[in-house]
Length: 514
Image 1 (cartoon, helix red, strand yellow):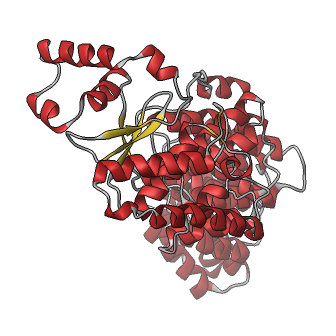
Image 2 (cartoon, rainbow, N blue to C red):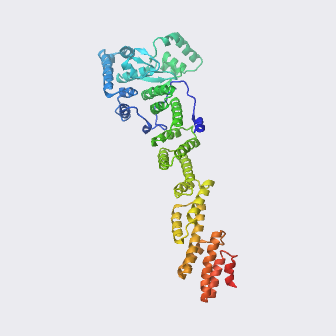
Image 3 (cartoon, rainbow, N blue to C red):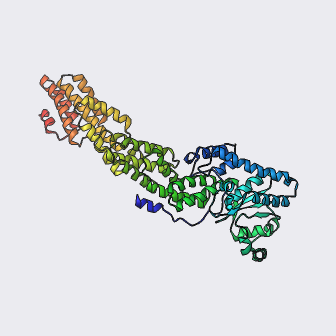
């Protein structure tokens, strides 16, 4: 497992998140993959996705201890702030004044202290905030007051742009004063002027965006995000924090939700890292544990042989215990049910069934596994050898020709592999010859001839295998002897010649011709 894990592990980059993509159809994390730390969180996310969004609740639900009662108090506080703005008739103000008034009132009502690592619920408890949680708060308020805005995300920062366009206003929520000290208005103007002279921005940008917005986008390489992404960004920040404290399972649970709402490359890298770490630690004692490997398989950069190798190791470890065979079958079935890649399913199925075939060699349990394996790769050397040995062992030890023929007929219904069918055919010929021999011994001549005719219909020429050589010799010798001692020598010679077609060098049969 360690060797495989080394192929999976990636360096954890010290970042918060990277340029955003709008939320899209998920291919790596599905809703059923999500793990919820509370019923409150589960209900909040379910409601949000099912068209009954309570945006306050979904952002509060990142706190494991939040309850419905606490959420109602937070909602009351939020509604009071909105009512204060309505009482000041902000909706009657011109847009930019409305933005400034809203910004200052919300800031004074809720925000007390900036702290780099913090989450949305703390705003209501202590007034501590960071750029993500404050942006969430302003986005909710802007939605309610119909203030147009955009969400912007860079490698280390999130902020809003209110009234996007030439007169846009950047809603900066970081520690007041720091940015003003570093990037003065004069610096920003000079920077944008340089971009213009260097033809690094278009006239369209100059007309449609303010100097501040152009500076923010270019200098900090920000990209558009949206409201849904803010849910994922908050989960992402908490996942990073968990990972820094080696809580890989906690980081993974949060990373899954982060990617579900914010399917971004940097979030994807975090998720990949968390999965790799957790798979390395996981003992796969529970059926659902294999879901983690299914998620890892959905990364386009993870090769099929990595997934197959990890799964083989999981099965190998489980098979060290004699009571885990049925559990292994369940793991395999559950795992494959989550895969969409037909090529991977084929490789995984072959590998698993071969692994179980090696385990069950020389037992009756072997057949169901080797049949599946050889149906996938009929030319695989080991599969062919195991299949051949299984059929030979199963049929060679059957001494009653009627039981043998019945077993062969059942095998023919299940086995379509050409080379294996050739082995089965040889044993079928042996069964027909032995049945003919026994019938001749009991003087059931008509029945004996019926089996010989069936043999002749199925066998085209001289036989090479010793097993069949002796059976041909015995059956036709017995019939020739019967007619010879009855005095029907011509009839006896007929059976001799029929037998010599298959064993032309038989001295015993030729003796009847002298």
